Image 1 (cartoon, helix red, strand yellow):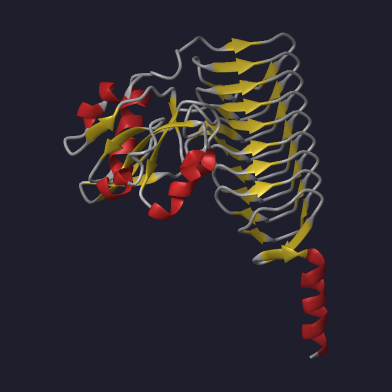
Image 2 (cartoon, helix red, strand yellow; image 1 turned 30 degrees about the vertical axis):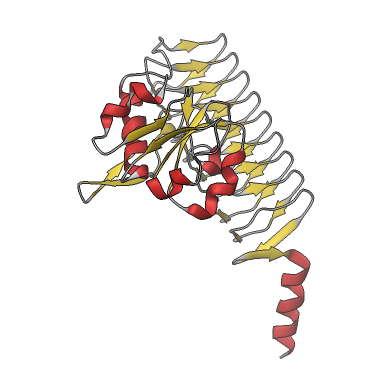
Length: 300
């Protein structure tokens, strides 16, 4: 699709330079080529050199600074965020990004009688277990040998808001949840589907998620990772493989956590976490520094 095809969704927008886009996204959630984004902060202009961005919805002040970027499509808007989400809302309502297909269930898969499985756009592989009162919304894929325990809700939407007519308005979600093979999700977890089709929520193979964990839209969790009870991961985070996220951990939006990392109990993570590191505290800092500070305080 070209941005000229959807320009009439906003009376205040003007196309400065047309472009083709295949998906929508945000700067902290880029995942594929041909992404249309919005930009409302001049400080973020340097981040638009990412080759995955094909077009930008922006104010005139920002657009003027991008005119020399011939590779970028530009739509000028009085309210870039609102117009961007109106485009997204329209495309989701028209099923532009994905076709509706009947639900399919693999061989030797057990589904509890009390589970609620959408009759459209759910794929369940072979040898899976879907427990009591599980809800699988449209756009969920569960690969072979995975287990979803009682009371989990997979594929719901999570909070993303824009203002229209001076009122808060929820943004509809156009992505999916993809759960890998040999994953186990314990009771009463909530996993939201991706906000944009260009960045699905993904739980990779051999991951275990403990009771009452919340995983927001667009999070991508690596293989062999363990997420302990009541952890909460905000949207569009990336977690590496073989990482431990402890009980009650809170991870802020858009954070990158490396492989073989360790986030200890109750930590609040607001900065990226490198590979092979251990973080502790509120806000989470290097574990050894946290312990030294604690010892110093106790001595004082």
